[in-house]
Image (cartoon, rainbow, N blue to C red):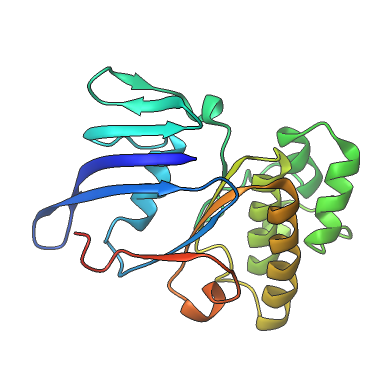
Length: 208
């Protein structure tokens, strides 16, 4: 169970607005987040992952405090051990597909399973510059899964994929999330792709 009760001031086009979020995410659940640009969707993911800090509040995961503004507790991203799929992929330019996954795990069998899942098994020696946008996005997803996270945070994870690849990958991903009992939070502007996942919708419209 993830318990989030936080607030932060967001910089908007006209001024600064206060984003308040109080919500619980059940273990193994999938939460789909919708909302306009600048509403704080990505900021929420970064605060949960430890890549940004709320101004007030707490984040508690399975009884362990990840963040507490009053008690000045803030676990590092490494200690939170979350899988994060960045909107801009955040790949290492000098690492091959294989090296990206080996950086996350030493389990060769798991790496082989992942590259097949993402249909990158023929590209394991390629660096990001020699991959298409869709292949880079798939690699970003595989890297997030490589650590077998208990919490998977995905920011616009399918935007560069064609419809056929998107459907295939989402089908495999849903099966894997269920098998590993991963709590998943997905941010997307695309309602149709979110509808391919079962789970609650969290609408950021009106939260700010």
